[in-house]
Image (cartoon, rainbow, N blue to C red; front, top):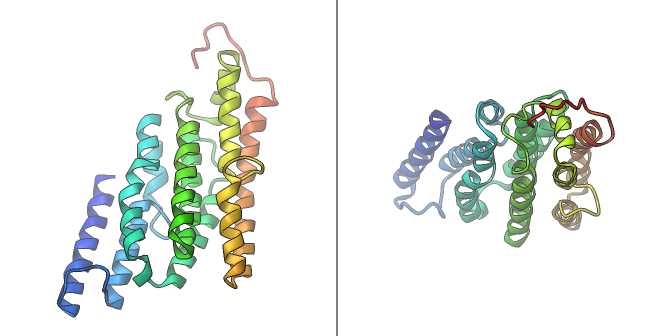
Length: 253
């Protein structure tokens, strides 16, 4: 994680120096094409978004749930703020393609995962795709999307015990706290964007704005790529709530 973040920061510094050399000023609000591309790729690397996402699932799988929560939420604020500041100077086609690729990878790669943290990592990659698309549409929509993502992700991570490593392990928590597990499943389906839950609202607004701005094909593709994510959320809910998990007297989690 340190090496990835340090590399991305170095690329941003290189882009700043290159931009100062080419334009004669240090302000990132006026960039030439080469520094713009470097900054975009560096921010994608920091966010764990496509095409620089490879490190993200492995890092989350090797951490505790609380650390994974921090990496999935708090650590994304700084690169998103930087992207927020300079998005008007970035190529919107590149951002839209990165967003679409992130949602595709996050959905399809998460289908065959059995590890809870890896599953949440691919879920986060898909949500970063929606966020990147929202940035090209407007700052208010981006803020709403990030707020809903942060709240629902936090509500999903916190009830899960650190030893809940696989989807089958989550099912054993039913005998200890059915209410907590039910709440977790509701927040998972909210992350998937299932109406009428909260997570549906920003996705609906993004699709609406894309249609109004003359991009119905992109809206359709985004909608289709969200279906695999919704599938593995519903599958997780089915395994934990609608099947009978093993119950033992010494079940701790």
